[in-house]
Length: 82
Image 1: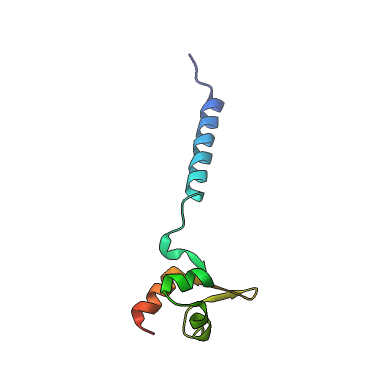
Image 2: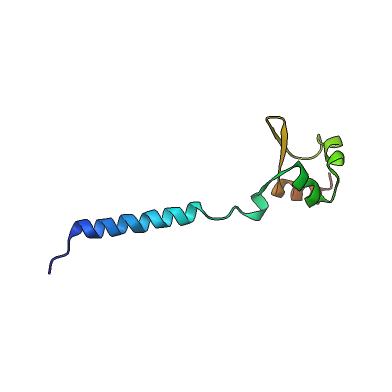
């Protein structure tokens, strides 16, 4: 009984596609998660107004007028005591 090389190739492609889909659907590391202002305030235990007032000291990104924060940077900010 001969093995069809195209069937083997098709199986390998299917396996590769499945592997790629599972890797790309992997959850974002909790420390690398991006937070909006409301989430960052809750995470730091502050009110949003306090964060806005001290925004120059707190690591953040601004996109289209909205503020975003990375958890890992907020943790480092608190650890450094800045």
